[in-house]
Image (cartoon, rainbow, N blue to C red; front, side):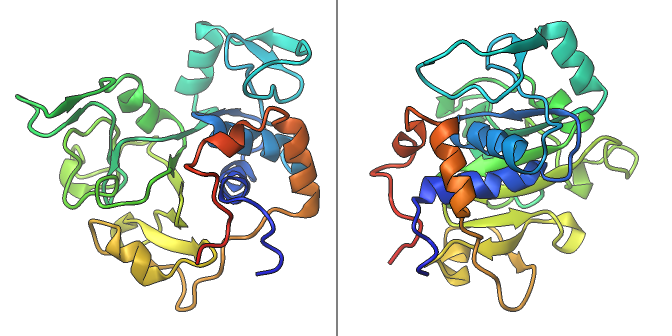
Length: 263
């Protein structure tokens, strides 16, 4: 445990970065500060071929820090709708998104909570989730791991395709469906469980599998009998985070900015 001298947010960023480790040259899109910093960390540490935008409409030669800009980025080209969607439709993008609900097969919801005809809450709408889920790889970040986010049965409104065989057309999954990893505030998971359901790959320090299961609305499997701890960021990665996030935006994402090791 002495190696976990970092915050939970920094542990999560390090875990998020692994989503893009073996992707080579494609567009990395991390939605939200921690996934965005995860993509940035991946680019400057082990996958320099990743393409990152400035969050607006340019590709930059180096990751652009979130928050206030202290220097003008060096632009390499435009990232307008035409280029973004050309990469997207060609499968040359890997995004990490944060849906409100996720079920055991990776079906995601960002649209409505409750009965669709009379929802309790109306949110963003499905937006790009339907197309994104069948054209390029997707991973997930869930900041509050609970039965409200990991729901039993199906999500209230399916915005993103998943590995639910009951939803397959002609008995086959969509050709481009490729769900990778889930990083939450409790653990890291993937979709290599039975029938491609979610399973736990590693536990954040101080978290038990039983605790994760209690906060999940469906039965989880394990990648191994003895689950490893989610790796802590190295000293080199911690130093890189100071450069990637000089405004310390990462410290404001999780309530009270807790340490990586929980009691």
